[in-house]
Image (cartoon, rainbow, N blue to C red; front, side, top):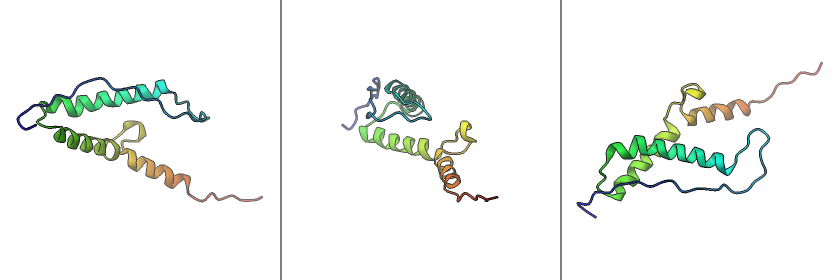
Length: 106
């Protein structure tokens, strides 16, 4: 509605991942997934939503959300992975894991 300020608030909903066999290298439970989601949602609200209030429309919130998600997934630098964006780190991982393995028979 034109002329009406939109305030975005509320707590994240709880998401339960589909059941699948546990992976041997790491354990993913609904609790750990929810903790990760709540942390990400909190970061999103702190960095994107709260500083730019009041919002004039839901479409502004939607566009800002899409921009933040794009930044978060493609351009954000992560210290844990060598200060490179997640997409670059993932590409490097797959490039390394798909290199042909050279073996010698003695």
